[in-house]
Image 1: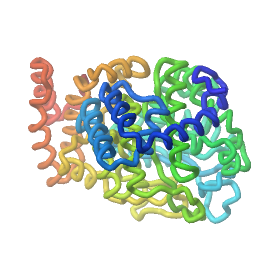
Image 2: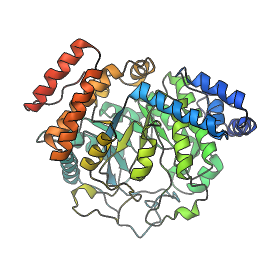
Image 3: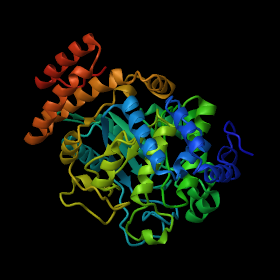
Length: 471
């Protein structure tokens, strides 16, 4: 029985409720009147439930689909402006005891070398990332209690935060590791992590168990209930995601929104971020084995409908996607992207991009500087801001500001200051020229006169060598 307030996975992600929602969407996908009513409700920017959003995703009427895309663009602009936050993944270890059939790290794969970074290697990787200009990382590790215990993860986090190289510093460490206990989540919280990220992979229980035939990840309920334990452990910023292509995308979409509704119902705050990765090739993984893989048009529609359904939630797209694909979805809802990413263990210290320990093939292989300039050429403001996390604006405090559309009062000046830091310390001459013009263009958009005055003062101080200002 569907119950969003239940703490049981099979009740807040109820299979029959998803099937009923998909039937409701099929019954109404050509119902122009019903679709227009849902669009009108969505214009209030308070979100949609999984049934309403499923109707928009299924909509077959071209002119109404255009309205859906236009609304997604408008909501993205109202909540996030044209800022795009940059981050990079840092792979610590590819030791894993799970049997996930879509991931080359699965325990039975004997073709890849197993690598685990020492703290000195972590230090070198972080310095390489700092020298690129990164300020926030998402650390990744396979599930292996022997090789990757929580103590190892905590030691890595401590190492990362401790490194100050030239003007570089990692100011926010997000964590993407396997489902764990409340006690371990509490330890992560105490270590000062930003967002805890865990992809559900698929919400379809039967398929989930087939895709994870062996290892701790086989336990669907334990995995699906992980975000509840994370919040009970004090982590109030959590990130959801599915791997689109493992099951029917409309089923996953409904499950994703039901999970978001569950967190809102139980904890009063939904997910801080939603990621939208698609299945892609990797070492011994062939996408042809996954018949539910989605095309670019479907991917764009998914992004737009998620943005409309949860207007306050950040959305992430990685370098799995090509430059062309990422460009298409930026204004439909994406607020964070990775740049200059290496998905191999120890990849940032290698001049040549290593391929033998990659988790997935990277489609967008440009340098961070190239990505920064590309964003600015498209009139976006690249941001390395970590201010909300460091000022305690997390969880319900962040969401309250975001839902009231007040967060931009902080975000725009913070984005401009962190961009200025990047331009002074890391940018190529051409990128710096474009970036300085972008900053001058958007200073007038800071509407508070005092904030604008302080912003200009701080930008001048950054030019003179001072760092790390925040509103």
